[in-house]
Image 1: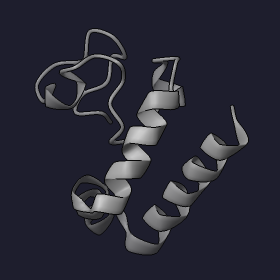
Image 2: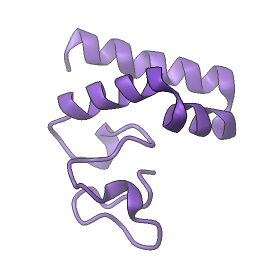
Image 3: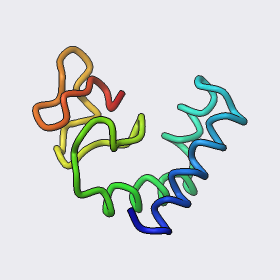
Image 4: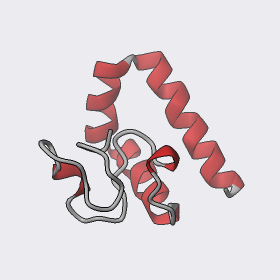
Length: 81
């Protein structure tokens, strides 16, 4: 993992800890600065293993985030969780 990606992952974990789960989900999915972090993490994420993906960050499958009732065909998660 690159140093930049490690720093972004750590920053997201700290922000989640500060905000709590519910507020973090809103902030993570709606704020412009978190959009940039999500995009950077998605671009740098080559492996679609669920244990390597952050909650809320879709895998390479275009419909990953829309899977609400069944697991994603690529990473096996439901709603990126």
